[in-house]
Amino acid sequence: MKKKVLILGSGGREHALAWAFAMDDNVSEVYCAPGNGGTAEIAENIKVNLVNLQEVLRLAQEKNIDLTIVGPENPLASGIVDLFRKEGLRIFGPDKYGAQLESSKLFARNLMAEKNISQPSFYSCNTREEVESLKGILELPLVLKADGLAAGKGVIVCETDDEFEQALKTIFDDGKFGDAARRISLERCLIGEELSVFAVCDGENFKILNTAQDHKRAFDDDKGPNTGGMGAYSPTPLSTPKLIDRVGVEIIQPTLDAMKERGHPFTGFLYVGLMIVDGDPHVIEFNVRLGDPETQVVLPLLKSSLFELLWNATEGKLKKSKVVVSTETAVTVVLAADGYPGKYKKGMIIKGLESVKDRLVFHAGTLQKDHDIISNGGRILNVVGFGKDLQSAIDDAYAIVESIEFSGKYYRKDIGKRGLQYLKKGDTND
Ligand SMILES: Nc1ncnc2c1ncn2[C@@H]1O[C@H](COP(=O)(O)OP(=O)(O)O)[C@@H](O)[C@H]1O
Ligand SMILES: [Mg+2]
Image (cartoon, rainbow, N blue to C red; front, top):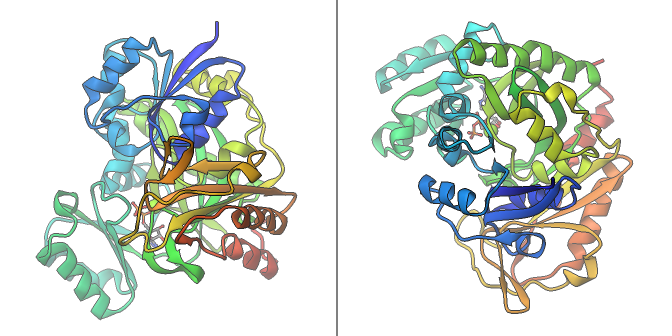
């Protein structure tokens, strides 16, 4: 019997998930709550307030959903998985306890310390005085992190004394991060190359989907304010089979073992944010869901069934699934509204989508209005290009960018450049 799938969320990541399920032979219907203008074309959008978990539960019951997948972190951190499981509904994701791997940086750090997983030295601090006194031990540059969820804005890297003083002011005087900063992880700053590894976990075992690198800053050459992400590519040239193996053996497996020992086997996506220093992986952070926009490059490269993988994971039978990944490279460029992540306009009509309808364009902040697709957010579309190597995938993605127009179209011109520079250095981890 074919299954009904519900995806929670409304961004480009959720459009990519909906796209993968819509093509899957195991799936009869795809629902998105609340979804966006892109998911409306391939799935049924249902209005729902994701903050109200009871409302989401009722929706899944009314529609007889067989499998629910959670896009963003907040419902996981609020315990949506615990609620669904209690009611006997199948949902893919960690319980509230497991979601702490993302919702508390210090929970994750302490768990890694317990298992001797490689990470930067860190201290758990409760007060400004503690942070100040430990500065002398760690020395600059160092990193101050709000313990709790801060929508990707709770981390300050300090290279100078001035930056350190400013960070203290932001956290302790201005209270910018609110409750999320009740505790602070003060960390040594690692200098190296960043990459992310995406895995599916079933409580005991894991399968790695792929690696990716994202581009968080608003402007070219990694300048300007942090955003939700302006582009990504997968895989990254940094990720040799040997490095990926090490991440599995030295990081993911011991993390799953620790969660099981604590009585909360971890089921869900595990996103491992790494800093590679002298060829060795160190964990910067865990996320317990897929990244956005990394999902938009990772899922199109997955050639085996995503549904089967996640279904088997919820049964603790991930070992039955095969993960087949394309040998191509994928690049996604985010088309944003001018001004994002600051003030920007909404409601612009998007033109040219018809001319690229045989290409992958995932919607993020869009709405369907009559016969038009209009912008409804800062990050509007994600175009995805493919190629036999990184350069050709970059060229392919930017060719699609040219075909789409809307007033105030803004995008970074250098997505993938870091990967190319790394390749030029010719320096691999083998
Ligand atoms: N210990 C560290 N050393 C070097 N860079 C770091 C460290 N911790 C965080 N960073 C940088 O800050 C960014 C954000 O930190 P992260 O822990 O991923 O938090 P979040 O994604 O929740 O904002 C990372 O992608 C990385 O560039
Ligand atoms: Mg991060």
